[in-house]
Length: 182
Image (cartoon, rainbow, N blue to C red):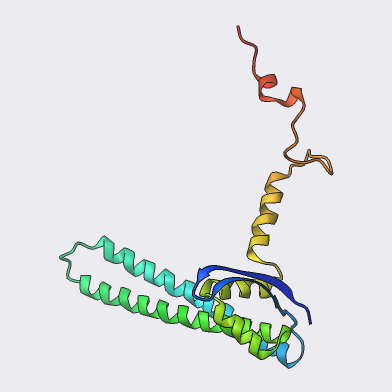
């Protein structure tokens, strides 16, 4: 089974230079597909929970900053903020573990278990989260920004095949649109 290519590039870490393309499976049929779907659901649910806990932490922090240093409830708000901070750290750890599960399931569909585990050992937390996005959407995050940039650069008046960087005619130049000097 061929999957979505994901390029890994590492420079100067302890394992040396790595330039490898791995393929992420997105098939959602059969037992393996059901396991992948369930892992993705758990990952998405945890990411949502992280957002909620983060909002609570921000709110508790804002309340604390509004109070004077000698206010009687300062200690109470500090304890509340620390509780949310610890909960946030726990949720983020769980999110990374779930991302690793999603990526492991996806990689073992496209390669043997041994090489898949070797690839997992090379990945950072950011790689795991990016790979989860790729598995969910079918495109790498860099593809999203490229397509958005292309849409922003194109205009309704551009002709098919016309490059956005071609020089314009002399009547379209800024000098041609300036009012004459008196």
